[in-house]
Image (cartoon, rainbow, N blue to C red):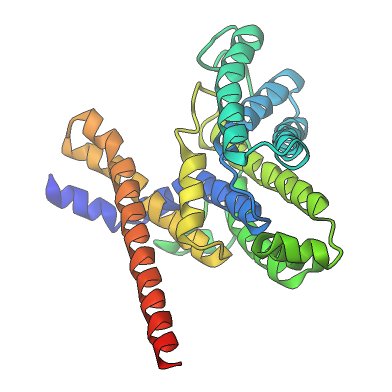
Length: 317
């Protein structure tokens, strides 16, 4: 049994699973990264993913048009980002408080819409919703191991990893990206330099909502073919953690997301060992907690080292 488990960890199918599992986490992490770049802690990502997952499924089911379903999910994410921006930026409510309220709203309202429009409080399985296509990459799909691992993914998976590159260019190579970072690092200084801080924050949060929506739609229109109650499973919060570990750098955020995806994939692979289901379900969250504790301890040690160096320098002066 152990040999079978170890063989599965080093297979192309396991790597395929890691990439697949990573997709919604990475979308959430990138949304968190955009928000933190403008100085806002955004915990509405999970709720935004949930509402977008539902609306994308409902619109595609009732219109039988994939593009309209995508548009419905995307506009839902944008609306959630705009709500957060309005309450936090304009009404000056704390982002964490607003985030908790919006997540509670998303969990309750999604169940209500399911009951009214799909006739089931738990899922939309009764509706014939559409899914994003699977993409087989020419040439690569024929290469042993590599083709199995990297080809045949959902369209949104490839969009996700291309978005990492696009956001890197956007944040570090465009004028708006520079303004975002300026606001996030020193809002007062940015305002003194004549920047419209509120406008930058609003646009950034709307963009974060749009990116979050892609993660939600992947879950209900790619990962599976229907919406189920609470289907995000905390992936939005894991994305926030991945951004914290990656320190807001797109490449490091991607690597942190892959690390969390490996934890989730391991829990799936462990099922062949016939362990109790409760333990299997807890494995990715236990690993996530361990990673967060390690990262926090590392940062504390680093901060202590910086302070000691500063004290040592001041004594010399």
